[in-house]
Length: 92
Length: 267
Image (tube, rainbow over all chains, first blue to last red; front, top):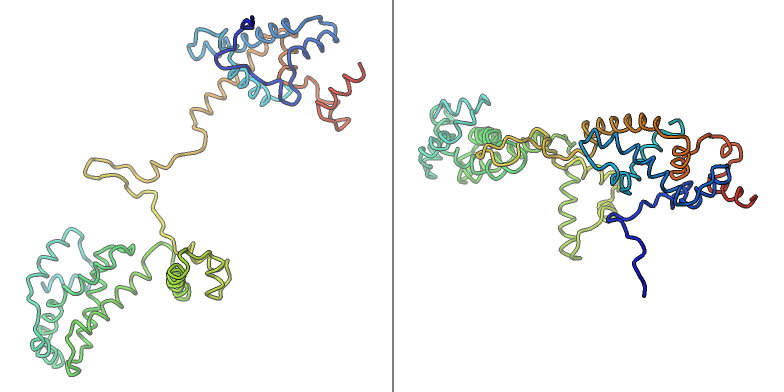
C-alpha cells in the first residue's frame, strides 16, 4: 500500500535549481564534499534554509511579521532573494 | 437686440448669456417674402435700421446652422458668432431682383463661414487644404468601398485607389485624429466629481513608495548577508548560481554550465 511521502508545501517548492548556474541540494552536497566540507543533500538543504532564515529575520522585523521560519521556506521569498542577490552581483 | 448683434460682430459672446440670447432672438418675427424684398430695397438705399432688422429676423437660421456643427470640436458660441458673420455678409450681398427667398441665399454664406471656421479651428493640428481634401476623399472612398465589398479598405488599398503613398495617407489620417486634453474633466460634474483625465490614466512605472521599499529591503538583505557563516554563504551562492570570483568563465569564454560539465567529466 502506497503511503504519502512527505508533504507538499502549500505554495510548492522553489525551483531555482532548474535555472542556469543554480544547483540542486545533491549537487551542492557533492561540490562541498569535493572541496573538503563533507555533507549530504539534507545538510545542504538545512544549511541553505538556515541562511534563508538569517535573511528573513530582519525583513520580518521591519514588516512586523512574526513567523520568519515559514517565510524563509516560502518559495516566493526564496525566488525574491535570488533576484535581489543577483542584483547585488558577485560583490555581496 | 442691436446690442447683442454688436456684441456678435465684435466677437465677444458671454457663454452665460447664450440662453437669454436665444430667447431674445426668438422674439423677432420671421419675414415674409414681400417684407424681405422691401427691406432689401431699403438696405440698397443705405438704411441701417432695415439692415439690422433683416439680420435680426434671420438670426434663427444662423443659429440652427451653427448647431449642426456643434460636434466639430469648436464651441457653440464661436460657431454662432461665425454663422452670424456669414449672415451679415449674405444680407449685404442679397439681390432681391433674382426672386429667391433670402434664406435660400443666406444659408450658403452661413455654411461657408461656419465651415471655414471649423476647418481652421477644429482640433489642435492644423492641416493644409490639400490634406483636408485628401481626408474628404478618404472618407468618401472608404464608404464606397465598404458598400461594394462589405468591409473597410486597408490603408494600402486606399492609397492605391487615391494614388498617393501609403506613408502620406497614414500620416494625414494620424494628424486628423482628435486630441484630448489631459486637464479635461471627467465624470459627472453635478455629483461633485472634479477629476481630470490625467488623474485616471494608470501609471505603469513603479511607484516611488515601492522603489523606496525595495531599496530598504535590499539594504537589510545586504546587512544580513554579513551575518552568514562562510559555509552558509557558499551554499547560498551555489544554490542561486552566484559566482564567488569572476574569472574562469571570462578567460575561457564558456558558460557556467559548460564549465560545470567539464569539471564533472574530469572527476
